[in-house]
Length: 277
Ligand SMILES: [Mg+2]
Image (cartoon, rainbow, N blue to C red; front, side):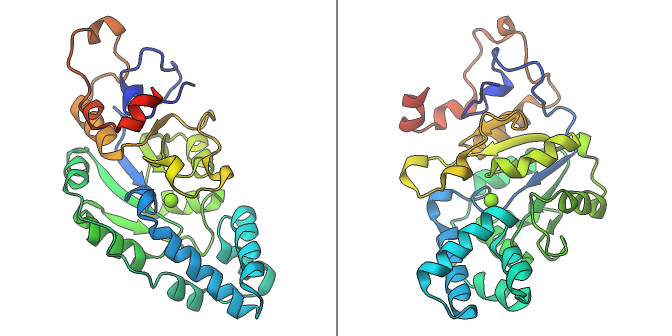
């Protein structure tokens, strides 16, 4: 595929014929951290540091060793918590409570996101590896909590995180979601592999300023993977474009688009983004 950094796939004449669209979508599924709010807020860094502190204390080890454990477990088990539970018998309750005690104030209300969510036809759900309390705090800060029907958190997932297949199965069953009529938005490509295999339309949400934030290389891998239908660095603009198109075909013939005004989100693209394309 040819990933696009904007809603362009909706009208991109070069988009693959196999690229899944949105006209049939009834349920909109969103990851939480670094998807609903910008990665550059570095909110997750607070959680990241508290995880490291917890491991150092729990294992009575150095900060550096705790860091290595944390990243190794995150990569191999989907969450550091799962690795600590399996390899060190850690009880998750205290851990979850401790690591999510962060300052949510960097998150600003996002009325544009709220409006875009409101205009999407169908249910909206959160699917997160974090806790419900954390998700509620984030959604309240963003002022988008009223748009979501429910949160499926790590507890609902029986402490098994994305990208484990059984987590998605539990989510779909719990909320009666038809995967073939659902779309999923995520900032980690690996968490979209199973949803795509289940029939969901997948959207990878990438940081607006990728070069300015710390991000492990493997987390950015997969943008070109077949299980990623769309890529955007402007979630609000992307959702606005979907809502604006309604039930119209996602990939109109190129001629039909000539002379029409530019997609709304083009005006929102950053200078960095424009240089990239
Ligand atoms: Mg995320």
